[in-house]
Image 1: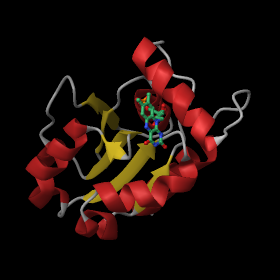
Image 2: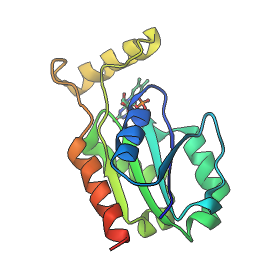
Image 3: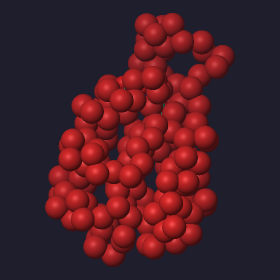
Length: 162
Ligand SMILES: Cc1cc2nc3c(=O)[nH]c(=O)nc-3n(C[C@H](O)[C@H](O)[C@H](O)COP(=O)(O)O)c2cc1C
């Protein structure tokens, strides 16, 4: 089974998650949508990864889904998002992804994210400070990558070939 992980993020988390996932799978390729537009007809399984900013997925992910929707409906699909407030993941998913894609995806996960933004971009830092203050999050324990959810997706992928 050929697997594609197509992702877009603003900082590093979505990319780090794509690489963690790839390293736990056989025959998976990672493509950053900011660098390459993949031909998904080459793959059986497509995993779409996006960061969340201001409640929205990355614009390149929106474009990727729009341009490949018909073919995506014929593939095994999975979705992950990276965000600072995993408790709002369902809201982000429903708001951003076409319902028919959500309905047919065999695995949908929130892989968490970082509220301390690296590399440090001054505007991002300022925004996250305000966001953290509003949500009264504890600066000492910012949201992190949720490894169990990555493992859950790996399990779901393994079940496809059982
Ligand atoms: C400007 C900005 C806006 C953000 N907006 C949201 C948001 O609306 N909801 C949320 O849960 N997390 C939000 N976050 C947190 C990001 O989703 C988190 O930092 C995630 O790890 C980003 O993934 P990336 O590193 O691949 O870009 C925001 C972060 C930044 C810097």
